[in-house]
Length: 380
Ligand SMILES: *Cc1c(COP(=O)(O)O)cnc(C)c1O
Image (cartoon, rainbow, N blue to C red; front, side):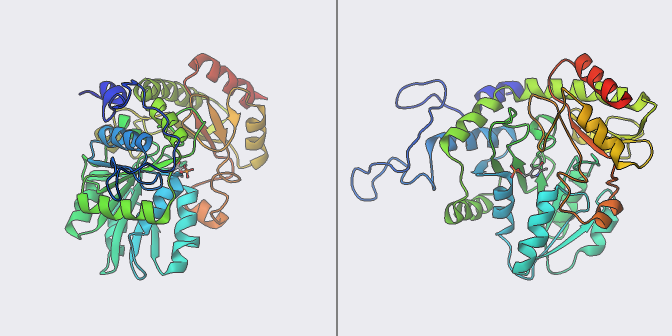
């Protein structure tokens, strides 16, 4: 099946008890057993719930994986992945990682004796230098947030195989519409379903997708043992969102391109970060591993006056000033004070996150209206 057909059909069966074409919301915590231990595959909803099962199957199908596992947020999915490690283990990741991932790594798991290294992953040599006998995992996020750097998934898959490490790919920004990391050799795909996958800014949820049965077993154990599982209503909302993922992503990409090209020509705008520009350092890898370049665009204003950025953000009308991304509506944000505020300023500067950097999640509205909004906000 092609992607759009899969988005609508794959992994999801009409409800076996009624034939309902849309997966019902199984709002139940427990299931009646015929005789002790004799059940219909469901015992307790932390462990299994039919609405969640269908969503997990749909997610696995879209990522070309065998197993999907849902969590109550993207952070809970990350939490479960890192809980497969032990004190003394080391993880290597990128230095412009999602702020929440950086925070849980350094301020939660570091206290449990797991060590994290952050480096510029555009150059594999930086990562090779950090690999030692304690290294267990390489964690990539691509495109990165908010600078939209591109990391070569295949190159890290090869490196991880060579050193027997797990390669995790946070695929939140790209979604399986744009790239499928398992096909490129990653072991684990992680998602914040809150973003493009849910797509309507109405749910917080996360997921992990794997091919390996043993990895699934470990992660399913943690999912049940630690209990950060989503409710069936939320699973229903993500199932509904997935059915239009391809349509939304197509428009996000078209609009992202138009907005990026507009900003690039604007006299008051400095650098524009969008991987579809031939001048972008990750352009060739992006072309190789992605179907298109996505709907995220970041830009700096000329000069380094933080007040200029604040003014633009206050003046934007269609682009709502809010955390998050990937919904049908356009959002804008200021990484320095919002998503990335938990990263110390010096570390932020070193990673290239200036104080005038503005991040746009370009929605699926009409591009002309979005560009008009940017024009009025920047010119004020
Ligand atoms: C939002 C996000 C997360 C965290 O997911 P939540 O659903 O907010 O817990 C992780 N990684 C990336 C890239 C994100 O954008």
